[in-house]
Length: 105
Image (cartoon, rainbow, N blue to C red; front, side, top):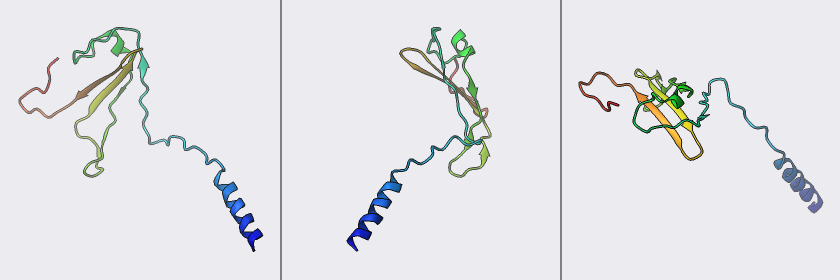
C-alpha cells in the first residue's frame, strides 16, 4: 500500500512539472509596437516633431466599462516612443463639442 501511494505521488509530481505550452496572442488581441527614437521630443502636447512621424498610431479602442458595447463612439489616438531615458506617450482624446477645450497645444 505504501509503495502504491509513493508511486502515485511520484507520478503526480512528475506530470505537474511538465511545462505547459505558452499561449500566443490570439487574432483578436491588438499590439502596439513602440518605436525607439534618437530625435529630440518636446513635451508640449503636440506631435509635430520629426520623432512622432515615425511612431505607430493605434485608435482601435472599444468600450469595456460598464458593459462591453463595441467600438467607442469617440475614438482616442495613442502613439508611444522611447529613447535611452524616457517613455513618451501622445494621446489625442476626441470629445463631443462641449463649447470648451480640454487642451489647446
